[in-house]
Length: 219
Image (cartoon, rainbow, N blue to C red; front, side, top):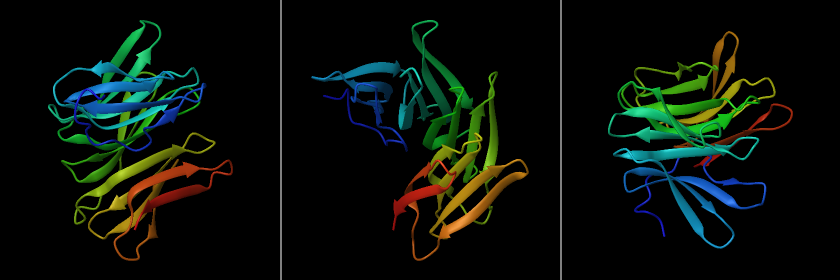
């Protein structure tokens, strides 16, 4: 059984390890857990026991099978990141963005150096943000913001192309459109993918070997 009622899950959560067994991050009873199936039962390992953490958790496995998790700290209104640190044989936790009410609807992916890249919603500013680890600290930037369009960037999904550039699909709440943003050296380029009716919630994005984006979403 789970440690408690499960909080909202983030994008790209369920992962399959090298043995074909499922792993995922779960926010439950106000804490963050790393859950994995050992072949006979589910094991729940406490990652962050701080108050009111774990909602919108998103998880990926690195090349060695170690978990990396992005999630929301509701008590402090922060985006947080946890990973299994093999150097200390324990979980290491970092604050990614300490600004108020940021870190909802997180989506995480790793680059070839196992550095995290995270897309998330800034509820305070009503926009979409992107953070990545530069080997020393997290750099944070706004992906898309239109002040007359509140809730721009809900339910994002992130992936990287062959050059390590970020691509994000997301929902424009005001216009009810599916949007897509591509990071280039000159800045972010935005495209409205589908504007027929109210579409674009719960997006899921993957880049193919030819760097072509593929997006599933709710209509």
